[in-house]
Image 1 (tube, rainbow, N blue to C red):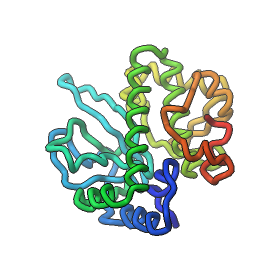
Image 2: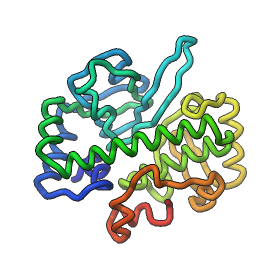
Image 3: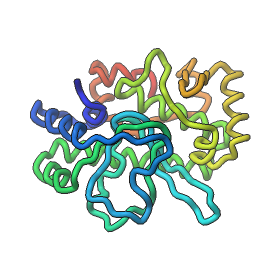
Image 4: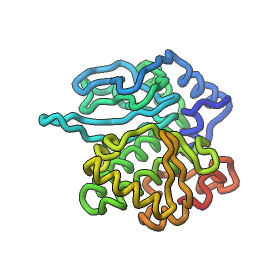
Length: 254
């Protein structure tokens, strides 16, 4: 069975059977179980390893001096959390879990070897970095220009597309075990304001939330309502091959 990491990277690049085997091996190396709300790497720390989300949910975040938290990105299964960390002396932000998660660790030496000797793998990780940067830019636009309704809806639809792209959606339902505080920290809103926006989406029959299970009731209508445009996710290979498995999963969503 293909690992979440391989499914993620196949959105960006073609791989030989040998490359696929190597990527699956990466995802199976040194897996560790984390509980909810545990740090994987803290700001200011150095780690010789990179970390990959195999299951669960994690996030990039920073704590400010007043104790508040800003979430810069949610990390879903298949996402490398910090593919450049072995180059850095120390992390400039923290990475932590939001739900019980399985995290794979890959040594920096192993990662460097693959990036230098496996062009297709290096290209895929490069594309993944571009996607990370695109997600961050959208959060900047959220804070600067989008209203509360669009911030919340845009973020939910983004998670929906990212999970759909590698097959983690079941009839428009997906697991997204976040609290309203988490969504507030990711959108720069208060939990009360987030609650109002989610209520509006439910009243408009666009979203349903049952515990940690979210359902996008009308993807086309939600996308139109929040003016979602997905070019920043760089799902280039899936778009170039609309009849591929990944292409079929995102067809009509972006």
